[in-house]
Image 1 (cartoon, rainbow, N blue to C red):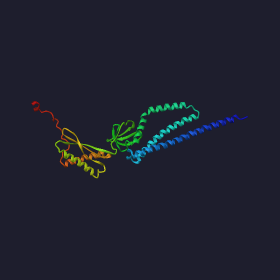
Image 2 (tube, rainbow, N blue to C red):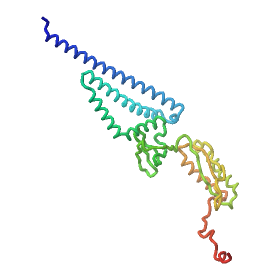
Image 3 (cartoon, helix red, strand yellow):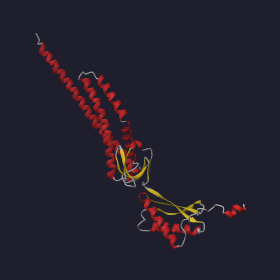
Image 4 (cartoon, rainbow, N blue to C red):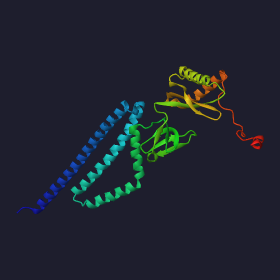
Length: 299
């Protein structure tokens, strides 16, 4: 008569072996999925950044900065996908062990809902930060206007941007608060200057003096490589009460826009002084335009 105990032990042993093999298969599939996802993310980001480096604004970044941004995004995407694979593998393992996975799925759903409600701003920060890095909206060292703050970018991560303003205050700005980005130091910038000249002055001589100052600045060895188009008078901007306003425009390398404008002001001032031209307007007397006592009596 067959030994039922031996048969029972053999069945249990085979059952445990089958369960173990299924668990090993789940682990192997999860490992392969993670390897495939890492390769896919790396290839996709590689093509994206290669295109940005050759055609987009990322061509202005150094290789180190591009690699840093790529590594940051790759780490974020891989961690998110890894979490999904681990959760799926965990649920499959519970099913193989014969446990009721309904409570686990319900618990994961409740946990996911709680996390999504509690960290929705954090998720928006990371998503917005990913687009900042991919599109290269700004980089470290750029002068930007974001969230009502103007300053130099000191650091960019997936969650926030650190900007130091002119007073030296360091502002940490979450990316979800950034609605629009103004980069003041990207590629080239325009010198935009209004020069006031009184009506009594020779307008043609004033225009010639300003244009000469712009040409001399563009020919100066210290400024030649920063000036793209020499500043010159383009038009009479407006007619004011005491004189005219001349609009002066030019193009310079973006990183030197403020220094170039200051240098041009000094050169225009010196040029006007050398040619004995009057720059600016005399202050209007406080009682100008008010009728005198005799005029009131005669009227």
